[in-house]
Amino acid sequence: MSDTTNPVRDTVILGSGCAGLTAAIYAARSNLKPLVLEGHEPGGQLSITTLVENFPGWPEGVQGPELIENMKKQATRFGAELRMAHLSAVDLTTSPFTLTLGKDIVHTRSLIIASGASARWLGLPSEQALIGFGVSSCATCDGFFASGKEIAVIGGGDSAMEEALFLTRFATKVTIINRSENFRASKIMLERAIAHPQIEFLHNTLVEECLGVEEKDLKGLKLFDRKSGARWTLPVSFMFLGIGHTPNASAFKGQIDLDTDDYIKTEDNVFVTLMGERLPGIYACGDVQDRRYRQAITAAGSGCMAALEVEKFLEEHGR
Ligand SMILES: Cc1cc2nc3c(=O)[nH]c(=O)nc-3n(C[C@H](O)[C@H](O)[C@H](O)COP(=O)(O)OP(=O)(O)OC[C@H]3O[C@@H](n4cnc5c(N)ncnc54)[C@H](O)[C@@H]3O)c2cc1C
Image (tube, rainbow, N blue to C red; front, side, top):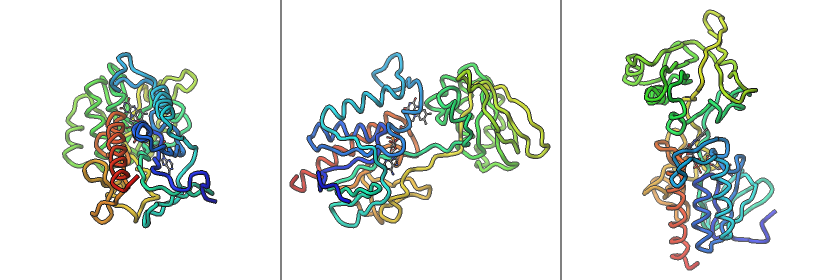
């Protein structure tokens, strides 16, 4: 079934997080009537967090969902169309590009990919219930809230070591919980973490449950020692996941350049390439192309850049 009401769109934005919604505000204000596909997580990662204290313009901080809701209102006010739809397949070989959204097909002259990168979680129901209430996947974002507290970092790679070292600025004690005997972290990062007086290690240890769901406040972690079979509780008030992110770019594999971890490769921030050649009309912004900063403000910034490039591209092509 094709989208008969609007056969060829000027621009489609994949994702309704900070990057996608900022792109939508700019594109809508340029009268491009962008279609925003909301995907499996409408509002993106900020919609599952609580207080955001580092987004400029909110001196007292703002709740993540409120910030997103305001961005949506701002985008729709200028004519952006938000649709609850998930991209299942894409054909970028011919222009206009073809996007498959389940049973629907949408054609578009330009595309902004703002599909984010999903943090990897342990997958425990208690962990999911406590996201924003002591459980976090973003040390840069939430480290400050761990001030003066004893906390845990999950993982054994470089991201876990980096997070743990960063968090020693706030927490009184950081326990790194690694499920195996060995660490994937580089020697230098591991040595730094081992040498730090505030960091302790637990090897061969699994988190079985996050405690405090009823109180909506993390109280501790129920742990299982895989070697001895012992179970005990570690009293911590924060748990940070340091087990990596998965960029939501699988639909594009083979059609655009991805790096070894499947982040979209971009040139000059937002230009998407195939075998090193820029693909006209296709741009990526936000966490799906940013393994380094992964912040709301940087995602929003690159969303703005992508929309401005779309505007330029369409103008150059007579739209
Ligand atoms: C718990 C937590 C707390 C955080 N706190 C802060 C903070 O305090 N300050 C800060 O600056 N940053 C914070 N961050 C990071 C911030 O949320 C991200 O950097 C930002 O959301 C990235 O925006 P994005 O638009 O690139 O991607 P996302 O927010 O991940 O949005 C991606 C969008 O793409 C959609 N999508 C994905 N695949 C498809 C598909 N196939 N079809 C259609 N749509 C699709 C999703 O549904 C979603 O709407 C936090 C992150 C987390 C997880």
